[in-house]
Image (cartoon, rainbow, N blue to C red; front, side, top):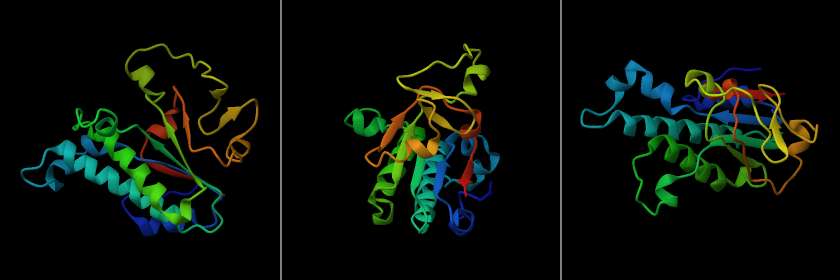
Length: 189
């Protein structure tokens, strides 16, 4: 495992060197909870709008860095649907969702990621079940099941088998691991 800073594309490029699979995730709420965000935002800017800008840039940084990796088979990004788009503009201020959706649009626009990009949309992070006092027994969703903090299985296959489906563009899971909820970059080499 290699660490990198999602705000620093050069560090991401160095961490992604020779990777076959990259899983990228950004975290709006970590930016929101950071007291420095209040200081870094423009004086008349709402902090949620600032967090949107930072998270979107982090998503673009991840995609830009992944696009440089010649050995890449799959870049997977944890995303959400765009409420602005799907509500025809009725819901415009759900920045924590739109930032991820726009990062997906950006990744899809990069020629180097064509045929190599997938997204996962997790409506709730697994660790929130404990934080909110909800039931904590993972359940099967369709034929996919979360079986550990890193790998997703499909009929007992590993993640590498799953990504061999070239037409796969998006997988939606109803449960998500605590590891994915943190601002981090995980690289398999």
